[in-house]
Image (tube, rainbow, N blue to C red; front, side, top):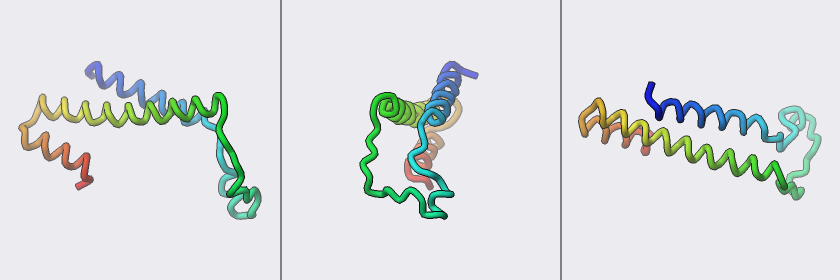
Length: 96
């Protein structure tokens, strides 16, 4: 296991924790079935710590995506040919 794998795992765990810290923004399936809480057009603005957690989650998600691409390119450059690396990049970007 290389150093970038450890960073990738740490970022993954941070995303999981931040996702669990976010409050529920809806009543869930029970509210949808019973029709309760139909405040579709209500102004629910995040404030304070909720907003910080949302921004942190988004930032770490972007970092996770960037690290995933970098690790894939590094692993492809170490063990494969240029064609294999190009094919892996194309699969990642275009979901072939």
